Image (cartoon, rainbow, N blue to C red; front, side, top):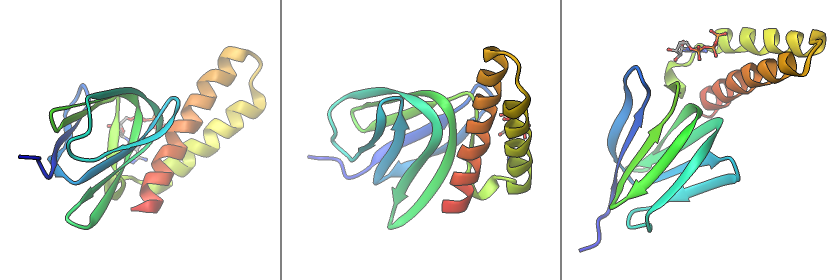
Length: 135
Ligand code: ATP
């Protein structure tokens, strides 16, 4: 019989950020956004520094996802990422300050390497602000 939910985990090296049976998962891959519903065919994608959205019992939750990988098989899904936070747990003042620091670094950067590092910090802050604002 077809399953109606997906057993989903968001895992970082530190902890399990989220684990539950969900109805749908939407995330941002390096090649663009994607979504999976129960009984999807096996699927895998690398992840952008962005957000993921889950739907469960008519409610949605947003998470900031700092890159990593997504895997789906047999109604088991995993996001393995360096860092993740639920939108509800995000300190928006901290993320806003991180965004401003990154923008200042981009403006004063003298090397491509400095720009790359600052752009990554900016993407992390933007992902957090996006997850918190949608939540
Ligand atoms: P910052 O410059 O604000 O420290 P960062 O991107 O360098 O941002 P990380 O190294 O990714 O921060 O995170 C360190 C720890 O702090 C992780 O546990 C992460 O979940 C948490 N964290 C980072 N930013 C926030 C935030 N805005 N709200 C809540 N937790 C955060």
